[in-house]
Image: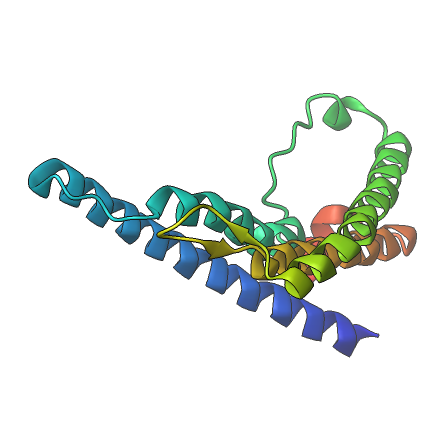
Length: 170
């Protein structure tokens, strides 16, 4: 079980790196577009379409890893004031809801993703049409890995660890 979790965490880290590189590439693309538009009155075609679909893809590439390292925005003003037992119950319920929510994203998006591949779905108009099927697939991979990470955290909480101890191990 532990080796499977490590393998999944390696996949999460790899997708996180891909997402970070993707951010850099999008930044460069936008910069070239702005320079072309401002200085040469010649913007790059399709930049809005590429950026729009890329933001979705890169967010889902990084979602599970961000959860694993505890870097999602989290307000603990009430949680920090609660007794340990109450905090634990809330964390367990949160993990259960996380597993359910992200598993439902995978379930509800599966047929749409398959259909996008089948029909060759695209976003945008000529001259730039961006295929949506790879992004739809990334959304489902990211959601599945996030559901799995919530499950790993849930198991750790049930075994008596705190969320911070579980994060520190990996």
